[in-house]
Length: 168
Image 1 (cartoon, rainbow, N blue to C red):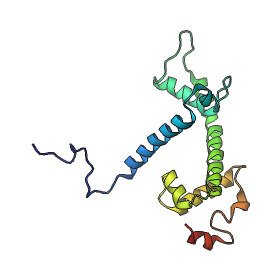
Image 2: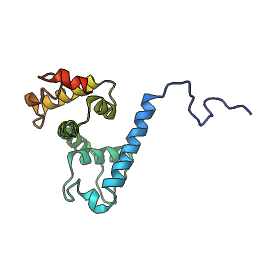
Image 3: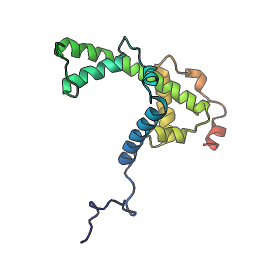
C-alpha cells in the first residue's frame, strides 16, 4: 500500500516548513510553558487578576464567549444585550492600550537582558529585525511607558547604532 504525502506523518524533507504552522505550534508551546511554570497553582493564577474586579480583556472575553455560546449563562443570569455588547466594545481601546504597554515593557526588558532584534523578531513572528524595531518604535510612541526619545540608541537610530548592528 503506497502512502501519499497527505497521509504521511513524517514531514516532506523537500518542502519548506510552513511558517504559519510553526507559529501556531510555538503559540501552543508558549502557553503551555508559561502555564506549567508560572500558573500551575490557583494562587499563582490569581497573581494576574483581581478576584473582585474584571480586567478589560476579561470582560471583553466573557461577553464574547457568552455571545458565541462558548460559555453558558448561569440560571437567573440575564441574557447578553446591546448594552453589554456596547460596554465590551467600549473596553477594547483600553485593553489594546494595556497590551501595547505590556509589549513595550517586555521588549525593553528583553533588550535589557541582551536579546537581539533578530531573536525578538522571531518571538513576535515577524520576518525581519527591522520590523521588530519599527514595531517597538510605533508602540513606544503611543504609550507612556515607552522610553521614547531615550530609546534612540536601542532602536538603531542613535549613536552607536552601527556598532549594535554588527552585534546582531
